[in-house]
Amino acid sequence: MKAIDLINAINEGGYAGEVTCDTIKAGSPHKELNKVAITMFATVDTVKKAMEWGADMLIVHEPTYYDHMEVIRKETPVIKAKRELIERSGMTVYRYHDRMHHREVDQIPEGEVYYLGLKGKTEKTPYSASYLFTSDEPVTAMELAEKMERDLNIAHVRIAGTRNKKATKIALCFGTPGGVFDLLQRDDVEIVLTGEACEWMLGEYARDADALGFNKTLIVMGHIGSERDGMRLLAEKLKKAYPVFETKYIECGEVYTYTDTEE
Image: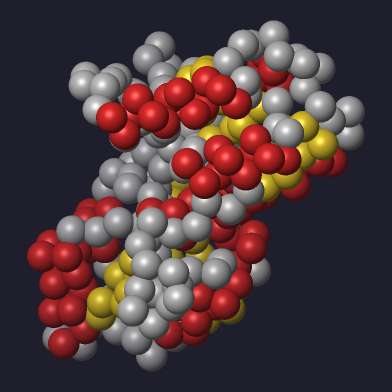
């Protein structure tokens, strides 16, 4: 199987629109595949790990060059060195983002919910990449945050608002999607899970709502912590669907380090 064959296969059923960031960032579409690596970000470390493993292709979810559409307006020494590293690897680097989100079932929240072990019903919202989730079992924000730190290996989950009241109505706003504030303000939403947040808007709204007696919580998982498990699940799916090549998930790690961790 060639890289372009795999790209066409995973893209089937996912609408990206006329303008998309889902393109090959490096390498040849005709690369023969023996080993395919999956990661969230093509960090320098993940690129090196993929190279050491002998990957022919690296599938990533987020930008490699710090711009959503990956327009390099100025090739800084950092960008130049990273580009040269990737080119030396000989890997085909493909970004799988828009079509991943725009499938009938968005594969990012699918992975997050799967590895969290949540059971319930997911519904679409008017906002891109944001969903409503009704949990079968009531859960508190503290319980959810503890599950995230344990099961999703997120170093620090931040909670604004209500901590210890049971809830079932959860908005899934992983990464940095649209409509987060609108969903937080809805009467039928008790907890909002998101990757990144504007603290003075979202955090303070949740804090005041709790102080006024409303069951309202914002849980901030970090961008990577809120999306990488969709890529982890993708790797598992490719292992089962394409035994003709090896598939490996490579963890990119969180972008921040903390005073209570060694790195």
